[in-house]
Image (tube, rainbow, N blue to C red; front, top):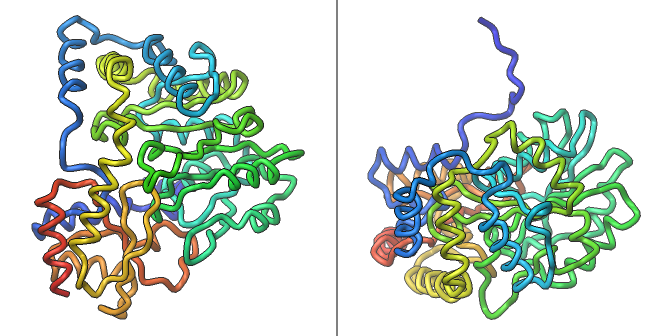
Length: 381
């Protein structure tokens, strides 16, 4: 039977490929972005308690009210943005589902969506499945900052959506408040909506505050903002996230969400509601927690031939391997697994048209023994 694929450019994601290769060769996996440690004990206890209490059936489409209320309270506390938990907050089966639902809700055939390269690999397939076209604008080198003039020049009458990401995956770059002003200026007086991927919102370093678009009233009124409990609570396998958007956008978002998953894992929603209410110190302490891991990983790589780029947020370290090899980054990552026993992600996987950069991405959301073992192998190169 012949099937005409709807995604001719898509194969198995690089994250799965590198994780499988790491497993085959017994490599230390610093590729796929997941912690190798568990979330807070209180969260796991709350999950067990929710299941024991019989909270095992369908949750409401938008999420249980208590969790949406806690998300709204957190949003106002952190960003000064008051959102209605009934109409503006939707709990989703992971951030990737939220990104897909937001794109599907507003992108029509022939519409254009501006994405900033390098970017997360789920954006473009979601756009193409709606009959839209991704317009790629490269981030400025070497610091991966947004060139807002280039973004403005990429807009056409067909542009419907602009996707931004801060803290940024894979680079770790973070928005400044001036970026929010520039973003608002670019989309003002246009029909362009904003999809802000903020899954690493609580992982920002060196005393810098996360610049959510929810801090900017003009942007909040035209944006979908996506967050991830999996990233915040070290439980990526639970696949729970959420989207905040104004009432009109949320109504369209929920139309799609209800036919993707209808609702999200119920016991986990009760558990997250419990820990948000009782222990805000967990997410408030994440910057220091992950900054210590960043600093330790960088210290462990002192003396290696890798050149480490600055990291302002998220839990990834970019490294230039040009002093080690002339291979392209995909072949270098395959060589690294087979010959050094460490898995990384080639940065070219985040680009439509990769520049001539010899960069790989390591995930430092790992226990100390994992980082030490990986660093020892990398120092030997």
